[in-house]
Image 1 (spheres, rainbow, N blue to C red):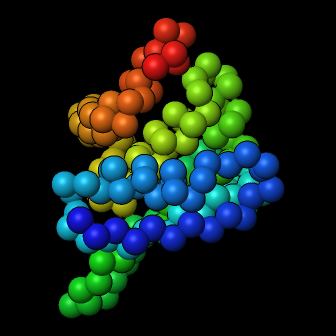
Image 2 (cartoon, helix red, strand yellow):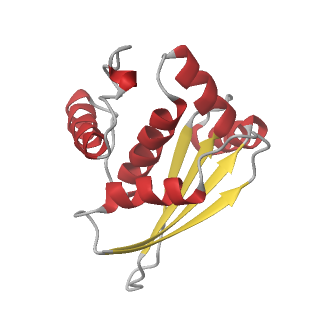
Length: 157
């Protein structure tokens, strides 16, 4: 599989995952699902994410991750998959609130965003269950506990 993952750091948060980690989590989600892909990951702070979430989803708050699938004109065949925007302060806050390692939460959200680029969704219960099952398999292969059922014992993995 050939995947080019571009990383843009627009966040002032001091401790972010390495570009290598971000790329690895995206590639793990793409493995076996896409022969070649090009993805841009942009790490932002709350003001930028709030603006994007308001503009594209009509929700006036900073969310954890947004995915923007590429909209290529008919007949144009490129590996461009799309963009993932992740809000570093929201990821840190959610990890703390959910009592899970921040690195695990980053991995989960990168996998989640990548699956959105691949066309997965969680608007309806059946879609959500299918998407969550895929996330669990990918994260398990990375040594990360089920993000929907993490316990204190799991964080010692």
